[in-house]
Image (cartoon, rainbow, N blue to C red; front, side, top):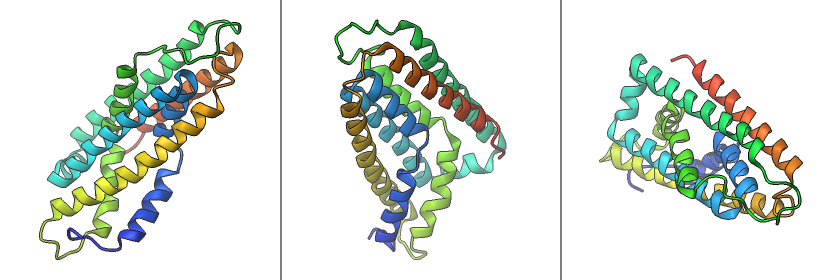
Length: 212
């Protein structure tokens, strides 16, 4: 279909990659726990849009330019690392603003939903490792005789993103429901925000150390 092959294998391999925890899962867990289901779904939407940016870039050849240019790769890499560290620092600092334990246990929107959306978007859009991943993964399922390589790349990217979004929405739903009884509990919220914030800082440092 659209110049691709082994679609079922592609879907299965993509599913295995999607269920592997990473920055996306950490952000979804943090926002779903802290702010509830709407925030978790909003983070999923931002992540999906960020991934679509990489899909389009791969289809039109921009990802290849990033992969080939050490300067472009470095600029995006350090911008992405700085943003991940910024998100982590914000989460850790937010520990100081959590309400006392006797507040009503309902989602507290410490951030507007639009900010949650753009966190999901930029954490993906500024990660050159995602661009390199698509360049390495998608061509394995593109037919050498495909009439349009760009269309094949785009089709595979959409399939990958759709399946990943379904998984992310499921994670958001399960986490939001499971944490509803804990939401608003001061000590637990501090622990979650601190742990996830530290994880984002570590991921940012790790991205900054990636070699081209």
